[in-house]
Each structure stands twice: as C-alpha cells, then as structure tokens.
Image (cartoon, rainbow, N blue to C red; front, side, top):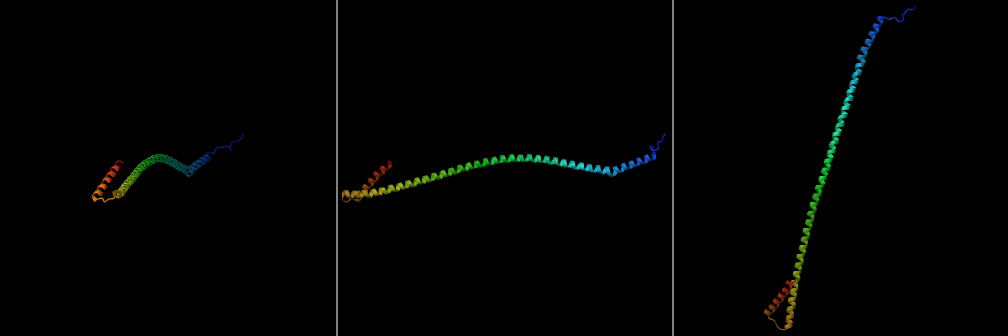
Length: 170
C-alpha cells in the first residue's frame, strides 16, 4: 500500500497558517475595514444631510408657494378695492364737475337775462324819450299855438302814463 505522506496534516504548519490568517484578518480589519466603514458612514451622513436639506428646501418652497398664493389673492382683492375706490372718487368728481358746470351755465343764463332786461329797459326809455319828443313836436304843430310850460308838462305826463299802462299789460 501506499503511504499518505503527501496528504499529511502538519499541525505546526496549520497553526502557522492560522496565525497568518488571524494576523491578516487583524491587519485588514485595522487598515482596510475600519477606514472603509468610516468613509461609508461619512458618506451616509453626507447623503442624509443632503436628503434633509432637500426635504427642508422642498418644505420651504411649499411654504413660499403658499405665501405667494396668499399674497396674490390679497393683491387681487386690494387691486379690486383700489379700483372700486377710484371709480367712486371719479363718479363723485364727475358729479361735482357737472354740478359746477350747471351752476356756471345757470349764472351765465341769469347774467344774459339780466343784460337783456337792462337792454330792453334802455330801449324802452329811449323809445319813450323819442315818443315824447315826437309827440311834443306834433302837439305844437297841431295846435300851432304856443303852449305854456304847464300845458306842455301836462301833455307829457299824461302821455307817459298811457305808455306805462300799455307796458304793464305785456
């Protein structure tokens, strides 16, 4: 039979291999595993911070959007109230301008009526004077005599009264 020396188990060699394996494990753990884990933990923390910052930014954006929409609604209502106020003021001013224009027009009409009345009275006075002069000339010519001052005054007064009575009936 054949001996199994090739497959023999050498305990010292196994212990040396096991010591090498433990030593290699400790070295890998100290120099490779811990730094890698530390780097992964830092990376995870950084990612978590980024997620938190993104979440906060999203919440802030939503909050800003709500505030913006509220301000927009308030601005629309303020604009509506300003427009209503301006329309009210404009209509009041319109009424004031119309009333002022009417009062000015009424004043102009009254002034024109007064001026027309004055001109009418002047014309009537001028016509009366003309009639008086014509009637006194006609009276003198008709009578062909000399009229005394008292008679002359009496004719003028009676003629003026008759003209005044006719004017009163207009």
